[in-house]
Amino acid sequence: MTTRRGIRRRFRRVRAGAALLVVLASAAVIWLFAESRAESARAGVRREAAETLAVQRETLTGILDKYRLLPALLARQADVADLFAADPGNEAARRARLKAREVASLSGAKDIAFLRPDGTALASARALFFEAPHERSALIEAVRQGRLGRAAISLDSDERAYAFASGVRRSDALLGIVVVYVGFDVIEATWSLSTNPIFVTDPAGTIFLTNQPEWRLAPLSSVAEGEAPQRRFRVAGQAIPFIDLARDLPLLDWRLHVLADARPVEQARLAGAMIAALAALLVAAGVALVLSRRERMVLARRAERVAGLRLERLVRDRTRALNATNRSLSTEIGERRQAEERLRKAQADLVQTAKLAALGQMSAALSHEFNQPLAAIGTYAENAGQFLARGRGDLAAENLTRIGAMVERMAELSRTLLSFARKPGTSNVAVSLGAVLDEAMILVRPRARKAGILIEVDERLRGLAVLGGRTRLSQIFVNLANNAIDALADRPQPTLRIGLETAEGGVVVLVADNGPGIAAEIRDSVFEPFFSTKEAGAGIGIGLSIAYSIARDCGGSLELRDSPAGGCVLAVRLVAAADAREAAE
Image 1 (cartoon, rainbow, N blue to C red):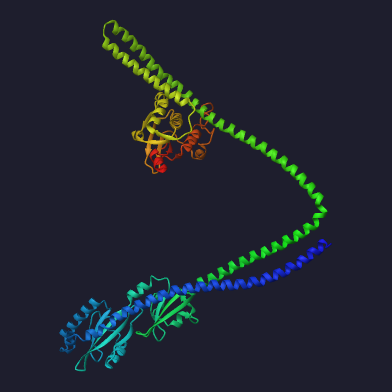
Image 2: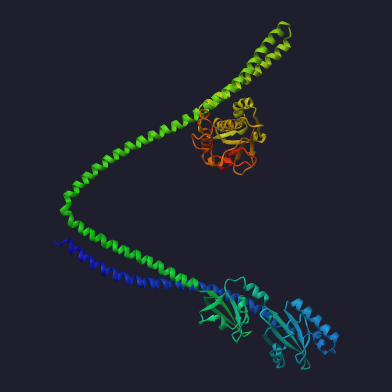
């Protein structure tokens, strides 16, 4: 039987051979895939540049074709010939200048010039190229030979044009020369919108037109390095690789170039190499994993005979331990579920306790509210008896009506207390915000009146409906109002305002007071349970926490805001019932 050491030695030789094979194959695949990606990127770049080149070639040729025939047409007009046949003088020059301006305005040419046979200027529309008579020699020579004269004219990098010239003849006698200068401002302005550098070179290799201002009238050799189709050009002081696509313009004896950035090609090659390298790495890892698993399998089969009984015993012991662990986990899960149920019940009881505590705080003020109607009922009943004894039934009926109103007032107080004391439901329905605030105010106004606190409620709140439970929402405003009443004790002109804030996506109710406010260092803790700034025995610190939880359960929120005028501002955001219906639909 082969020993463990022999098995490992054999697999080491196999791994070395597999590693060499994977390295060689990976190198070939990486090179092929990188070149494939680079060629694909290069084809895309060349295709886009070729489209741009074709469009710009047609555009440039079309513009020049438009003006190529204009000199010949002007030379055949009788009024143009008359300009040269007239006696030389200021009047002839004036008429020629007017004619030149008219033609330039109608044709859109950069300039129109009328030259005498000796090359001197008769008139020009804009006199842009009068300062360069040496540029007109080729034009005049071509006209004298009976051909269409044409030449590129450049005074500087800003004043450049292409000139077409035709002779004005009568009876084979040359009377003068008509020159049309074609500007390229529009062409260069259009090229400047392209991300690709575009330029035109003349037979001498000078860049005549371009969307790169620093290249104008510069030799191509001064801005380019290397040979086409891929070479480096200096742009903004940097040598950047470009793919140079060019087309000849036979009419002008020019060559149009469009440069495409070659950096994406290198990036595609690098990305392809990285992808292939990653794939090769994954293949190598897979091969190593397969060999490793095969080695482990062989070693495991050899060791299986020796360690069979020990493995079975180990599995049996581990199974027993797992079963015990599972039983322990099941018991722990049950205990945690019971703890969660007790926690939820304790939270619900805590909310109810807080409500009862609030009722206890309001009991003194409410007892005064009950005592007043009871005293009034006694008085009205005694008066009614006396009126009946005197036969004044109308006055007795009026007193009985007042007694009924007092009884109804006491019944409303009792219903509100009973409703507030019951445990609320958890379903959210459309509730009138006005009814919620009326119920809350019934419970807090007696205490506020006793403390001399003015409560102002915005009437716009009465026309709104929100999503929630009536009792739970009332508890929010009761808790906030009671906290404000506690804060306003011994304050001058204490006021509690409940207003409406305009907001999108809900209803925001602002509960603001002019009390001392909340210190900045405890603002982050006010909504935590059992946090209170009151004296010991004055409260247990769960009012704001309960209001915060109820607002969250109703789909809203409760936040503390800064008040420029001082005091405390609590914003209760609730879901508008109309928005909830639209969302459901």
